[in-house]
Length: 326
DNA sequence: GGTATGCAAATAAGG
DNA sequence: CCCTTATTTGCATAC
Image (cartoon, rainbow, N blue to C red; front, side, top):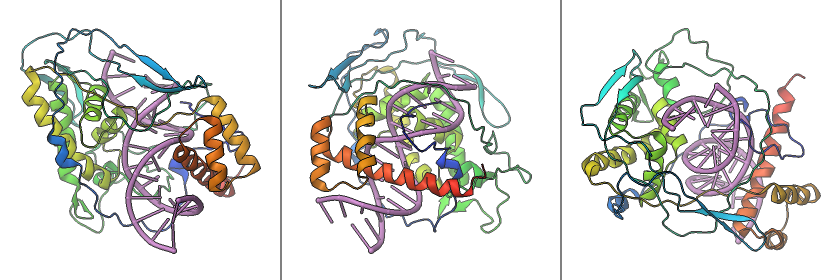
């Protein structure tokens, strides 16, 4: 798994799982208003499952930086027609072992504007892995003995909570969130998704195409595995629920969606430059940030956030090191 | 070729 | 407006 590695310093041994417990979980003001807009189905139909693979285009800026990718239509080159009657083979955990899918799929394309996003070009060294032990491989299996790793992570995931013997709330509720219900839905979602013959990737692309909240394959994956916090699950559930039912409805229509790039990926050169600046001054003024942004040709806000995250990462890692017996 | 996951952008909330 | 801290979520890539 590699990714960045550009960090000149900071080895970063997986802050996600090793971060030490901090203060209490913050409140979580409600924030949902986009859902309603989800209704607007992105109809741009004109596709049949004929579009073959992926077609991508890269947008570059003056500096030759890739600022975005364009319409890359995705469509399962192979997509048999095959009737309904999805056959699913599940195991005890409700995990699908095999399926006989069917259905038409939709593809993705571009939509929405937004700030220019940069497309990566990351190198990718390889590195051995810390081999972190992560909890139960399967949800549903409550494990009174689950060798829950040292993970001092804060916010537990749904699967962890559901699997937990449960001490306080006899039920499976957390913050008024019915974990059991979410677990049930997640399981169901997977089954229905597969019945439609859709992959997590396709669902993510379709979701990204809608007006409402967008989620990636990663998110879908984590949701299905319940490898997310109850709050995230709670937020994601209605989105998936709505999308799924609509997808099932227009399952036979075939359509195309749009998608946008939503995450910046700095080029190695940019990261190098940013790090150089960071080493000289980790807390640049607004003016300086503006200049750096201009120099590197990135959105100012993106640069500002980069510095924030960089500081945070540095802080976290150094904090970690204190507890890491070398 | 789909899914799982590490790392890190992005976002939220409080100051 | 911008910072910090905590958390969410996507990209890239390992599996």
